[in-house]
Length: 460
Image (cartoon, rainbow, N blue to C red):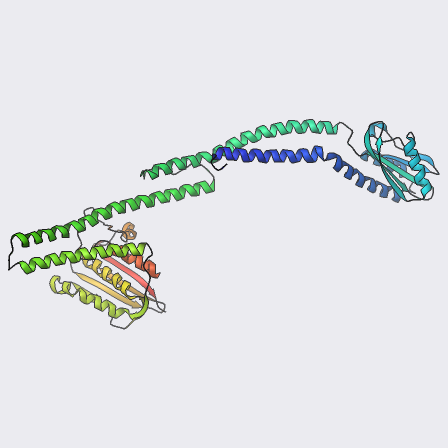
């Protein structure tokens, strides 16, 4: 069954279920019918005896007995002083004529002479060869009532029931086969379509469609999930290609420069330019080191290998320390870093990772700020949180693109431009550090007015 198709499995299960239902119907309606009939008739006789006892002195007793005999197929006989005063015995009801059977007559007389209150006897009716129940009850010292009824349904009802049940069984089996086919078809068709689309996706076809025409909730959920997975895979593949392209570019440029200046020193040694050439080689090696370290850090963060080393420290002091590193931009390129506080504000976080966050966000602001070369760092202390904002005055980001800037090497322009500071994956590192800490973060951006990157630290 493990390797059978869905259509065949549904068909087999529904067929088995149908057979079980039909078996139970036949079991209770035909095979066990006689037992149930006997049980039912025995209880019915008990109820009739109680009724006769209640109305034994009533003027309407015989009229009541006629109705009971008609409705229940009982043959009723009342004996007074060993003489029959009332009898409803009819052969068509399968009853025993108690006066024509020597054995029954003897049992009746034995009961009357015994003084007992009642007796019960199962006997074979020789006329119809059916099992019959004979029941006798003492009403008073001189009056006795005898009831007998067939314990087997003798009329044509049982034969009709058997024939009808046979026809119904054939119809049910045929209908179950048809229904099983259409149910399995309706279930397997959308699943087969999804399987075909999934195979196309596995071959790298990201334009495949997972929409299916079905009203089954679980299958629609599966289609939605596969469609979501397709979009994620497509985006991941695009990021992979961009990452390879951009990392290759970032590696190629410094390697080219290193090789060029190294060959220059080898082929045309120049004492006056030696130090400057070596400085350029060292700068490019440092750039390569930063790029490799950023890629390794991002890989660790995304694979959840990195663990937090939480400690309490002054975030104001840390920001000032980082801004001092960028002092060269103030001296050589007229950048201005505007920090709004010198107040000591303690936070609990991983100090090394928070240093990475602020360094990358300030570096990003340097790259994209406006012609005024201003970068704003706001530290806002509130009752339950500490909010840090780093703002540039550049072109801003379109609203629909703000969530994408956290992606590796995401660019708002088609042509890749080498950053003044950073490696192109700094914001992705920042995002993963925020996630690792559980900090809220985001971007507020307005075109032609700049962008503000913010995050919030719980104030405990």
